[in-house]
Image: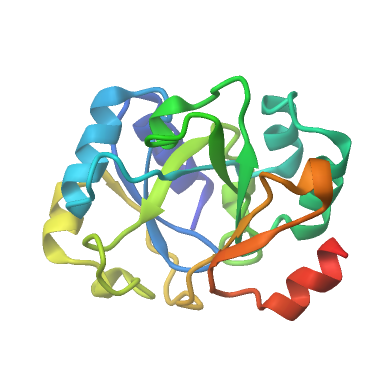
Length: 203
């Protein structure tokens, strides 16, 4: 990963293109969250039903918190304990921000902020959020290496970033939509962060 890779990634997303990129878990697909055409292409590449939600990824937690001013203090505090890291947090979204990522529930938004250690560190310079989903056919195995990504997906993207082999375990999806009111949370998908670690962070 080089600064030039990140610049190419940024240009691709800014123009509504679709990029194949590495996260702290598995390889993913990304496009501009406000681009209907980009989102449609991303979903078509995956064969993902259009009513399934995606997530919005920021590459810096401060950028994410600035972009979501409606979050309550309790939720913000929880996010600072969980992120950056291999967690997708499902949040209340009363303002309906990033509706293309929300599927049939515009009042709920999935948020990702990856932990960007070497060799992913150059991605910290990416200031633009992306709508993202894993780079696999819908329901298929996650991709740990570029070579593991389905050939039709690799051929269909506009930019491809290769950071070598990744951990290969998808993010844990945790529902924090009730956290502000009650402190309750629910694991929607088990992944890279276990329930015990979540409990320690959110207790």
